Amino acid sequence: MLCDDSVKTKNEKRKKLYLIGIDAAPLWLLKENANKYRLGGFKEFMENGVLTNLDSTLPPMTGPSWPSIYTGFRPGEHGVPEFLKMEPNYTKSVVFYDPSIKAPFWDKIARYGVKSLIITPAMLVRPSNEPNVDMITGFPLPSKFSSKFVQDIAKRHGFFGEPDIEAKIKSGEMSLAEASKIYVKSIEKRSDTAKELLMSKSYDLAFICFTEEDRMQHFSLNLDDWRDYVMPLYEKISDFLLWLEERAKKEGATILMVSDHGAQPIRRKFLINGWLLSKGYSRLRPELEAAMEQTTAASTMRYELRERLLKMMNRSGSRKFIYDKLPKSLKGLSKSALMKLLPGTSSESYMRIHDFDYDMGKTRAFASVANTIVCTIFINDSRFENGIVSKSEKPKLKRKLMSDLMKIKDERGDRLIVRVFDGDDYYEGTKLFIAPDVMAEVKEGYLLDAFGYMKNGKLFIQPEVAKRGDHLRNGIFGAVSYGNVRINYGTVERSALHVYSIAPTILKYFGAKIDTDPRYKPIF
Image 1: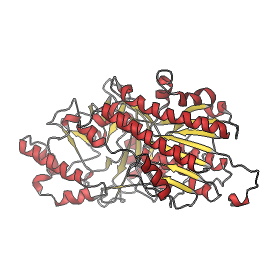
Image 2: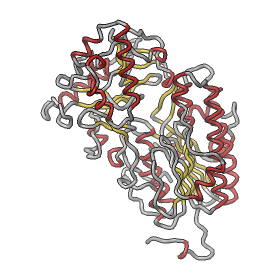
Image 3: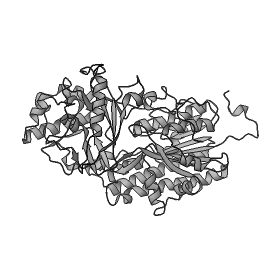
Image 4: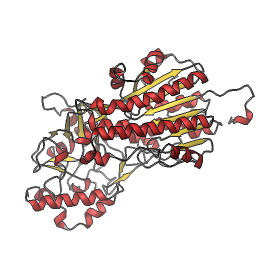
């Protein structure tokens, strides 16, 4: 039965819950640095609660993982496979979380009269329509506000979402030290906005999501001095946690902490499409292969111009339209304009390939979309406009592909791929997007690159500036309760926890109906 404040007794006091989201927070980073930096807010979970691993989605990315946290469902159910999804014409379109497909926990508990404050949930680009929800939308688009009340408070603190400075860092226009200071200030502005909102109204649930640390980790984790750039961000989040913990103690509230996935330093990249080409699974367009033999300055200029034009387009599928309209002289390529970002590669050899660079009349499988520790490989079947793999051929091809992936060796001759996944098993026949057929996970310290190609046949290269760090399958889950619920911290720490368990945990906490994936139970 739905309820609201009007049916509560005078003595009834609703339990309060605070949920802190930290994009890409790894357990190893917090535990190794807890006593070296100002991380008292995190230590509270370690000493008086629990802080443990939380298994992410496949691939472990912001795109699918946060919606799984919000809904309690796998990507095939909530509709977000990554930041992009494949289209039948081999283009990629942008994907954001759509609450009308699977509702988030804050909308569900709002119908029970629970009042929520939701600040910058990643992948959500439109504020909630529920009257019991105050919201500021989050990464990757500029923030939107659920009301003038919320907007005025955010404006007073100069907070308009995560600053868009990635391009400046990539180009070298902005140093890591400068970027770190800007991100720290952004965290501070978000924290101050949250504090004022929490002191201005009475909320039963508050969810505040921090995302800046993920960007900083991508740019720095394999550097010797990465802590100089990353740890100030965690210290600033810790300052907010300390404030929140004092508040929760007075209220007898519970605080949960989650990250969508972890992070790690990246030493080498493996060019998965280069491997698929070398094994005959993929073929490049004939005109592209011919252009690769050219090493003149003119061909370099053509390639750079082509990439510049493509980068001007948004990621909505219009890139292929522009490509198709280019004169033939601009469709060839041989050198990369990105060489300054890719140490250890030859400007005559490395290039960036797009899905429309393949000869789909001869390509049976290709990697696309995911560019992280888990690659996504698509079999070129009837789902695509030029699919050549028949329904009867597909099972055998998939088995061979999975077998071949597990045989890949690193530069020392050791196994590179630690496990492979059948996309049919994971996505369970989703109709919301074209699902990958095979996924492969690489061992720690490596990245599976789905975009680069070396025409000299080399498959291992050093990571570029924006991939000095990348993801881990495990994020974090933390809990500390100050009286309103009892949590067996030892049991939680010993349990195998998943991102899909967060939503049912919150629904149970507020006495709402648990209508999430039944395979994943509440954590407590």
